[in-house]
Length: 426
Image (spheres, rainbow, N blue to C red):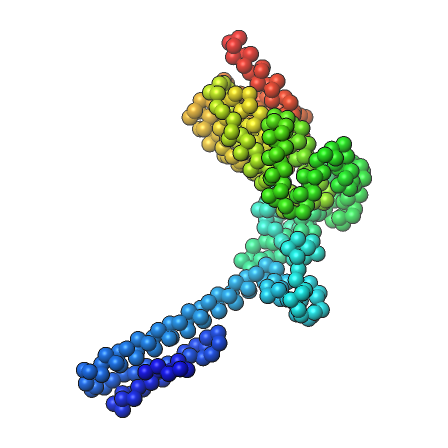
């Protein structure tokens, strides 16, 4: 029989008891007695078997509780490895100042940390892939600098992978900006952030505040404030309403283009965080995709294939171009970002596209941009046009032969009319 305290006992004097204590559960220990019968009559066998099954059930429940407890400890340990403050904040309160990385001195539920408290960001780190994407510096470059110059100096996460603190990422951004301006990394990599900012200011003027960055576009400030307050749904709603009110073409030209430039500039100058820039990008992509999906297909020429080269993860420019082309009756197919060149060639041949449109941010290495475009031009038939646009300075300085460079979104319409005129005359 099973007693109130969870113990299983037998009153049969012929039964030999073998005790086994279960692992303590969350509230009290569970003790079970397994019974084995030697020479007991058949009438007692069912009772003994029932007692044994009840005991096993009790032990199984205890094991489940133990596993759940162990998993909870493992999860909290994982969180703590990523964020040292999590071990003392995971329950909504903090310990004393010596134990709590955030320096709180009280241990009460009232000492909660808000999700967007920027004072806690010193514990946030980025992977090498994230740093490559957000600074434009390749993984190989980051590793070479680490060995040659001792910077960056990433830590290691729980899996042994490089983990870059945000302050190092900010310094890497500045280094990349100065390299684009012609400075050699060996000459500037040892400089402090303040020295790098001063050097950057000599080329681009003194650092601007966010309102100064938005000077002349005060009507766009409300979108920036929604980004900085992390009101994602409100941001998407405001962008969607603006697109409906203005029409998609005017929305792209007069709102999306300047707003995206300002967000990028604010990010480069440190006025908004990386994750805030990502919130903006993802929200705008949702709005543009929804708007593009409502444009009826006319089946008119040209057929345009849109994508980016490997290493170019920024796809917002593609969506802006696709919106303008779709409004002008083009048949557009997007491969998304980071398509290998050989696959671009195969895709262009499979559906007989007339134009391959590529978007470039300011991050990719200029030599890689030119080499990729020359390789693509050589692989595509002469009758397939290549359009290249975006913010890469090398496109304007050294436009590759056989590639039509679109300096701005306004050039899309001009290029489209020229292409159609050439087809009619041919």
